[in-house]
Image: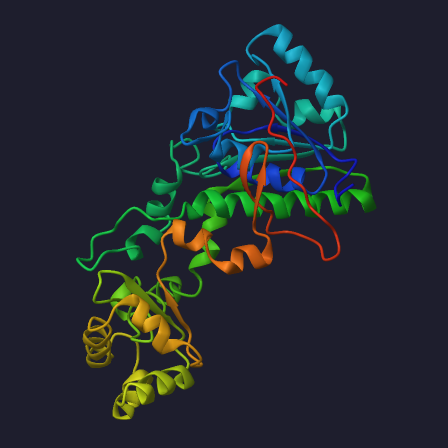
Length: 358
């Protein structure tokens, strides 16, 4: 049945933040009705394909129903009004003002379903100086300060490997909707949620942007303990062109590494402030460059050190840990990454991926 059985969600979102949020609702048993434009969610066409579906689209839209509506037409609007009568949640990802022009803003939907939980996901929110600025993840990260510390050795910002603003918004929206549904059980009242990617990402800076929050200098990677300024929290190249990562700054890990390498005299270097450990970093850089990644994996085996080889996705997905945890399953719609939210003692099976309008 699922924890959310009986909850009906009208999903008007496309691409990543909204679909990621609503697939987590569908994975837990909610009836999610994905309302798509005549051409469908653009993610349907995103390569590569597994069977007849895009891997991206399948993993973010499994278990949903699809309804194809032209919301600029009278017939499309009438059909959406019918769907809203039985809805508990509406999630939309249009730019501010679009839902109002279509006739389905919060007040209009609340007139149809008084206890509706209505969630708008945008880049910068419904109001504010940036509210109408067009943006996807990269621009939001740039304006929130995060891109400045996603830098190469040259100091130049590079495109992040993870769309953190998109994903932060999806998780924030999920939390907010579940909170609102819980409150509705007590009060009988719905809620309007103005979820911005910018707002969702900004709290993720608290551990690195302390000085800037106090009105001081902006963080720089080379002097930050978790951004590259610490030798024991760093990525190192190996002899075969691969990389390894040291991922724990605690002194016990430094002691275990340096005693193992015959250099206990450098342990005190690991206690210096971030940005002042260059001699230790240089030693480790030269040391790790002398052996292959496989040799270092063998060397670290059995040692109490926060270490990991840097794997590409093909290597990462082939790890025994993936199988041990059951994190990938094969379905008739292709490979599925299982939900991160699972409940002990309950089995999960992926729902079917809907054809457009099915």
